[in-house]
Length: 52
Image 1: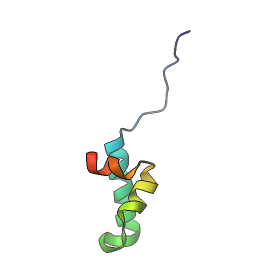
Image 2: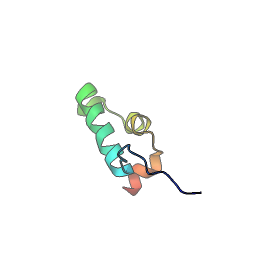
Image 3: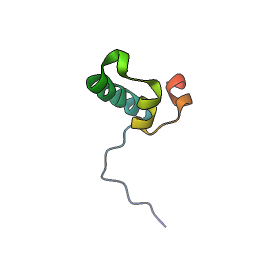
Image 4: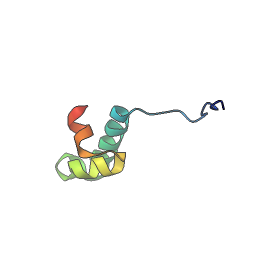
């Protein structure tokens, strides 16, 4: 059974975190954005932020 390549571009975890942080900062400012909100928006766990 062969795999069909996805036509959807893949975003790595680091890029997901950075994109989510950018969105959170734009919406709530630097002081209003929380790490938990960023991880929730990026759909990653908290340890991924510290790893990347």
